[in-house]
Every structure is written in structure tokens, then in C-alpha cells.
Length: 526
Image (cartoon, rainbow, N blue to C red; front, side, top):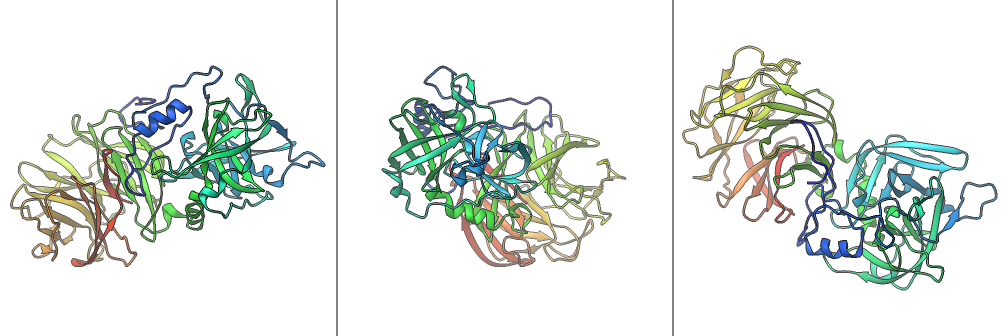
């Protein structure tokens, strides 16, 4: 794993490139392209690249290099004749980007830009700096959208090319970027441009969205540090710098493939607080955690939350808003040390971590959800004992310490084939309820609770999963009708299906496109 973390609950940013094996229009969250050299491209498409290690010798892409033999551009100088769109080119950490409107920057996904990174607009004698507060990655193409904490105003609004993806072939485009003008020669705050010609447009599934370019007679060619910078065709955005060999070729993400997605994400710009159910994922191999953003039940994009070290000991045990800030936080349990901790989140950005005390008495007890069972404004923990089949509640105080003795629910499942699928208020009476599913009989039922007391008998849902391979990945209101729905995941096929419910009444199910063969499993609904 790149950049291993330290400490039990520390978050780690990771820009691993994994084999996508794409056969659906969506890939798992957190997948970041690190396409730097031609050999790395081949390795990536073969699915054998994990973390690129690239030398900084001439002819190898570097993280600092920019346009070779490029022309200096000074769009904010008095009397400048530079194209107006060049004013929108910004520096994004070690990459470049384009301010496509006052609040959104388009860059390359493989740059690995995360919330908290800075975006800098060099405006002559004035330097404007903003902070990234949200990010969304395209599911296939090497592009990423960055939302700024404050807008950068009075710059041109960028237009996209309107033609089809393959129409770029044969066109000469102008590509911009910050960084070195040659290996070891930094450009600092100087912007450079180079003219390149699109010679081949890849329309294959694995390399979809890439067009390759060759330098003009001056030998102008993009270099690694130009990653994320724009390429314009007749003043309209046509590509995003992706990778190259620093000498004879470059490659750009084809904006024609991504423009509809870009417009959709921007239109639904409050995607992480818009009331739509989003899906929390974890990769058991890489320990990454990420989110799929959904808008009106349509996949918009993904964001990498971070990486939990010491996997697989830590498992996600529940999601709930512990600090009442509007963002759901993640409950973790360590199956070895028995520790329970909370990631306090601001959207997809980790704010801080804390441990819940004390630890459970033994490894038979595991957390199965979090909710406010005693209505004191503080989230509590639901526990399940795999040997005795008891279900209990820890009431917590604001310091995440157990408050009083454990309380047992006055019921227990009749066999270990029953599994808790989630905790939520299914009948909208203000009390959390418990969803159960049985991997032997395939029955699904709800315990309607009043605090820790079961109200009557369990209520069975008049629907069954088709096999025991289906398990509950989370519960949430996917259609905004005020009723909780159930997200199912198939451990064999990795399929995703949502059961739409009205209380305990099954209405309809709908398939959601799922990731393939990468160890990503849904861990909850946000």
C-alpha cells in the first residue's frame, strides 16, 4: 500500500491505481488513476499496476515537470493578447486545473487532490488562494471536480466543446500547465502553453476517454506536472492533461466523454448534503473507504474518504451523526483489541477521531448499529452477542462513555441464522427499529421498538432475497418518500439492489450498477 499509516485510528490518503476490469459504467470509489509513463499506461490497462514509482530522469514523467518548449503566457499583464480562457488556469497543489466556474475546478483524478488542498490563481500582482472542501471523481475518465470553499470571481466561464468524442482527432489544441519547463527547471507561478495535435482517440472500454497527442514543429509536449491542466480547441475546453513521456507523446482525458457528468455534478452541487442516499464503501484488500454520491438515484461520482490502517482488524460497525452537524459519522470496531471508535466527518472529510469506552467484555459482542434509543440527543450503540444471541444497548453520554448499565432488548432471535441488517426508524414514531434477515430461511423482518422494548411481534416483510448470497449493505431513504429502504448486496455477483419500502410494506426493487471484483463492499448508507 502507498503511504502506510500509523496509529489505530489515523486516516491515510491513498492514490493507489487498481485494476478496474470495467464491465459496468461505474467503478469502485477511491480508484485514482496514476497514469504517468507509456509503460505505466500499459501496466494500468493490464491491471498490474498498484503504485507507480517513476524516476525523474529525462524521458520519464515526473510529478513536477510541465510543458517542454512551451510558450510563456501572461494573461493578466496589461495589454496582454493571451486567450481569455488562459485566465481560468489555476495551480492545484502539484498539478494544474481549470476554474470552469467561480466555485468549481476541473483537474485530473490521478493527482489525488483531496479536501483541504489549495487552489491558486496567479493574477499578475495578485494571488488568490482557495481551499478545496469537496471532491468528486469520474468513474472511468481521469478527471476530478473540486469544489472551493469560496468562489474565485471575475474570471471567464469556460465552455466545453460540443462535438462527439472522436471529432477531436486531427485537431490542434492548446494545452496549458504550471510546473517545470524542463526537468529540474521550475516555472513557479509562470503559466506555459503548448500546441499539440490529436492523432488517435481511444474508444475502448478500459482506456475510454483518452486522446493521444503529438508535439508540433517546436517540440511542444505536455509533461507530468501538467496533469489536470486544460487543452482548448478554439477557446473551448476539449481535454484534461493526463500523462505523457515528456518527449514525443501526451495523452488527455477527453472532455466530450465527461461534459454531461460535469454539468450534472455542478447542477447537483450540494451532492453530499442533498438528502439523497449515498453509499459508504470499504475495500477489504486496500483498506480504503469511499463514498458513492447518488443524485435522484443516479450515480454522480465518488470520493475517497481515506484508509484505515491495521486492516482487517478494524471493521465499520455503523453510521450515525454523533455530533449532530448534519454529516453521518462512522463507527469502527477492532475485532482483535475490541476497541470501538468514531470517525467524526464533515461530508467526506475526516474532522477527528475518538474512542468509545469501555471495551466490550469479550469478543462475542459486536456493534451492529448506532442510534438514539433513549431520546437524549446522544447516539447509543446496539450490540449483538453471537453466542447467546442477546441484543443489548449501551446508552452513551456526550463524551462517548457508557452511561449506566447495559440494557437488553426483551427479545432474541431464535437462531444464529438471523443477522442484524440495520437500525432506523421504519414506522416514523421517533424510535429506532431493528431490521433482521435470515440466511437460512431468507425471511426478513423488523423489530419495532419503543426504546429497548419490542412492541408486539416481529413484522415480516412480504419479500425474500433470492439466495443466501444476498446480505443487507445498509438502510436509507433512496426515493425521498420519508420511508427507509433496504440496500442489498450479493457476495457472489457483487450486484446491488434496493428494496423500496413503505414502513414494513414491500413496494418494488431496483438494481443499482455495482463494482466488479475489487473487494469493495457496501458498509452503510449516508
